[in-house]
Amino acid sequence: MNLNELLETVPAYARDLKLNFSTLTQQVELTPQQIWGTVVASAVASRNPDLTQAALAEAAGHLPPQALEAAKAAAAIMGMNNVFYRFMHLTTNQNYRSMPARLRMNIIRSHGVEAADFELWCAAVSAINGCSVCVDSHEKAVREKGLTEDAVLAAVRLAAVIHGLAAVLDAEKVTAAQAIGV
Amino acid sequence: MLAVGEKFPSYSLTATVSIEKDPQKAFKTITDLDYAGKWKLYFFWPKDFTFVCPTEITGFGKLEKQFRDRDTQILGGSTDSEWVHHAWRTHHQDLKNLPFPMLSDIKRDLCGQLGILDPQGGVAQRATFLVDPDDVIRFVYVTDGAVGRNPDEVLRVLDALQTDELCPCNWHKGEATLQIA
Image (cartoon, rainbow over all chains, first blue to last red):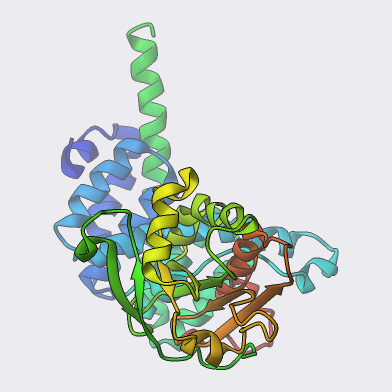
């Protein structure tokens, strides 16, 4: 099912999310690469296979291959870093901060796309994964690289809606399975 | 001996890359300019056809994919000729399918520049170098006599050398953000 078809399956109770998604992909504050990279990274981070598959397929029509890879990489590396650095922030034991992380994260240097875009996608994923330290530091990094607060918020809106859609699609799958007595 | 932080020397050597009978396929000239953009793991041993060396060499061979995943090319070497390397690889069960080249530093140029020629025996010492994509030596590991090297340790060091906390997530309020590039 392509993305449009998938969105058509969103039930009435979640119509807000469906409509939000279609307007948010037109936001002028972001370039098409920024928009579709955010969609990809957010879908991956939201963990619904159907949404991820549809988002990747749709994004492939809007992104060069390197950008598509980089957006997936942002979700991958933040999937790790959001947990690690959130722990650092949550624990009151400050000793951990001076201990070496020993986590490879070289993709942050070698993703091959505009640094601002990659940072934006990391910020969006961090918002989904709920790491406040990460959100703060990536937001700062993105604005230092020249993006506006409007652009940041535009990306976060997209991330939020995609995450909501993923939850809806998960719920509907359960409902459909129950209906056929699985 | 060259140290960490120094440039790895230039060289152009014949290497044995397989046990094919055809010399065009079995031998290849390798220089310091090959494998651009990659890390290099050079490890030297005193003599082919001796006892400790095959276990170390096959040890590195078993980890070749791990090194390759880390963009690292393994290059073995001794002062033996490429034909001696060929004979050894052909006749030693564990070396037949060795997945990396054996350099022949027969003129002792490279080992001389590296400073690893044994003063007593005149052959290479058991020395290992990790070299980064800018040709800078980042790790030197030498053992004496019959003490074999530990390839896992070299992998551990490579990992540590390649791992930097690049994420601004370890930023603390009030600090300047990390400049990656």
